[in-house]
Image 1 (tube, rainbow, N blue to C red):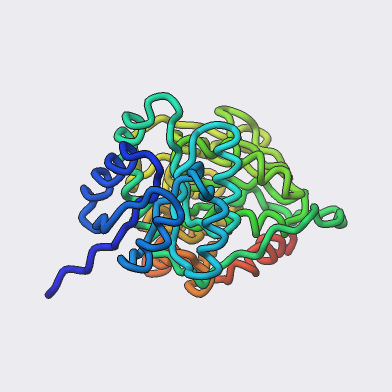
Image 2 (image 1 turned 180 degrees about the vertical axis):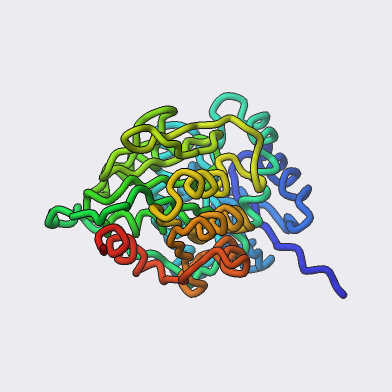
Amino acid sequence: MMPPRRKRVLVVDDSALIRRVMSLILERHPGLEVVGTATDPYDAREKIKALAPDVLTLDVEMPRMDGLTFLGKLQKAHPLPVVMVSSLTAKGTATALDALALGAVDVIGKPEVDPLQGLEAMGPEIAEAVYAAAQAALSVRPAPPPAALPPPQAPVRLAPGRQLIAIGSSTGGTEALREIFQALPAGLPPIAVVQHMLPGFTEAFAARLDRLSAPRVKLAEDGEPLQTGTIYLAPSGYHLRVERHPPGLAARLVEGPPVSRHRPSANVLFESAAETCRSKALGIILTGMGDDGAEGLFQMRKAGAHTLGQDEASSVVYGMPKMAWLRGAVVQQVPLAALARHMLAWSTEP
């Protein structure tokens, strides 16, 4: 049986050193093949025609045309999975999040101080992010963000015994989470989220979601009580668990080893929800590569929790939801556009 074809990568960056380092990092991955490099978007346009890559890594700041402008043009004329490479500055991080809204599949942070050593240190994570992006279904596009917050809704009357909503997501999850959270009213049970992101972006991502959503969105802090109407994102490098904190729940951040190759891991969050909340929790697994979350969500279902998985048609990468479904962890598969409605119904139905 022939091994699967390696995914073809085009590296686009104006720095020769960055192009070389990125190429070396990506070539170490058994599923990737760097077929070329480009110095700017005009060069990239010709290389795309000649080399037919499966995925691009694209720098933000380049001469003649910036990466964000090129991304917008590319996704209209010749859609390809794109991983943005952005400097870890306030401006660079905001631009990278804009790129996700324009259709980039993922972002990589390029440290301002010693970027070469920083990229090398993140080599395996970068390669996995690019490999996952190469699997993306480009036909899947979350709804564009509205110009303003939705008008206030009537207060939510929670049903008894609704303690926690736990969500795990990865590739494609940033925009999926935005679409879900923008459709939620304030006042739902605490929502704990593990979103796989490379370091440097979670704080800005939480702040952007907070501006766009009626519920409050913030990074989880160790030991803080979980409040109704608040969404808690796991910070980079920490597992997020929920623990009993009379009279409610509290967040616990753990610097343990990676679980299912990730820290934070959706398995850790889901398993803690199964132990702490049992039937009083709702577990949701969204788009992403790999199997993180499948076992933890199965533990939630065994404990009596209701569990949902994003369906294949609306997933950018139908990996994590598929593995959870095959594991028997998912009660029902749901399109992305319907997940907020299901969350509201679970929270309010007796």
